[in-house]
Length: 186
Length: 186
Image (cartoon, rainbow over all chains, first blue to last red; front, side, top):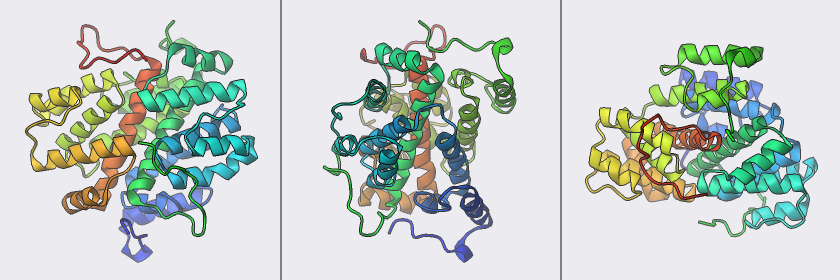
């Protein structure tokens, strides 16, 4: 195991302070990637504050926010990240068929106009680092420039978190089936 | 059409002004580069910049290696501005011109010391596959330890996120600057 969970008595003062703070303020407490992340407490603390904002304060409609998260998790081959968001994505309004297509790295069929423009935005962003004019203005005109930035930073942050999950080998929930098929695309 | 016309102070709402002033005050280069368009979403500007400030100045990763990781990340995400701006600190902290030139061409530099080689391999694999092999993780752990590995991962993730912001907002290169590498039409 690359990052055995730190026991309280093993933690430095800084690690304990951040572990407690995240445990208190985060929905879900200190879990998932934040358990290994507290090995570097100050980075974990600041990263989680950004995450908190991105989770609760965006002007991106919920199904589309989940769409951007799932596209990112697939791009990064992060099974844990995909898994922990896929059920809520369906609750938020993405269909199971679309989630399935995303898990296989396919473009979902029958997307709404809104889903399509966000899918294109996030896919282009991950594959080239850029977003074409037509793609940018489609989202900016339908929503706003602010939403374009919010989507960009959501893709960026979820990619960062995916790397943390993958590098720390954060364990997959016991008994659950890994959703990504094939496991890696690149 | 300009994607993010710089916000004039008289057009900013209260929270935009508050955060723009705070960032201008605490950040060495003031409110500039990607942080200008980020003022459109002050909640993100504030939290992103606080994460970045820590990663750049306060982690356990030696500055030379940090700057190298940033250049590799900027090249991977095709962010000319990020690469250009970080050439100077990279040189100041001891990355050679030959190494910088190779990174701009996306090839492995010929002469790397042991630390540089490790960071090059780690960041390249992380960006390429979203994870790192056991062999590479073991090498990095022996040299840096688990906490600094997380700092390196977060640095790659953060600067990729910032690169996406620079690219999506089309933040311009400084006047007269020669682009460090070409970016294909996207």
